[in-house]
Length: 189
Image 1 (cartoon, rainbow, N blue to C red):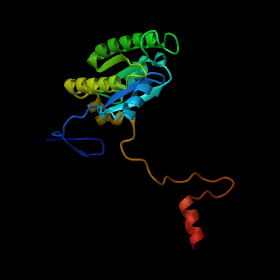
Image 2 (cartoon, helix red, strand yellow):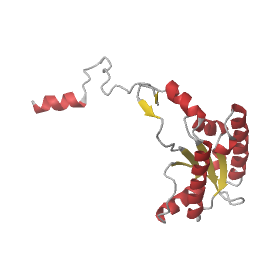
Image 3 (cartoon, rainbow, N blue to C red):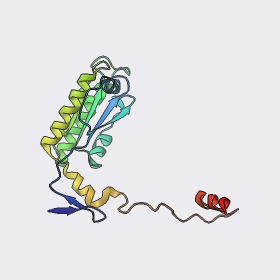
């Protein structure tokens, strides 16, 4: 039982499902907590891809939905504790954005549990690791993002074949353009 991916690469259906989780973390609290978790050598799911943002208040519903469109199985936004935002109300704005994005997920047929907002103070490395494990467990329970199959089939609007490593050089108008490899081979002769 094997499916085919773009480029006709077989995929073994018996492979265990490993979810892809995206975590948008504010610089001052959650990202610092992630760094602390690493410094403390705490183990948490390696499936979490941490993306540092200046403030969770800058998160946009489109950005959250784009993560799902690009194949993420779960997404979470981690920001400052209530009343502790470095930008006054950034985390409050982010909570509203996440609630709106959850509603949009429901409308398009994805489970809203795939998206969460967490308050993680800078000094809470163990809490960051716990939240990462919780979201990984949620993603495993819910299964693969149904959009991922469509993305694999359609190549997500990206190239199906790998890019040419040696594309043709543009025509030179003032002189001759040569590749570094050609320049090196001329010198060695």
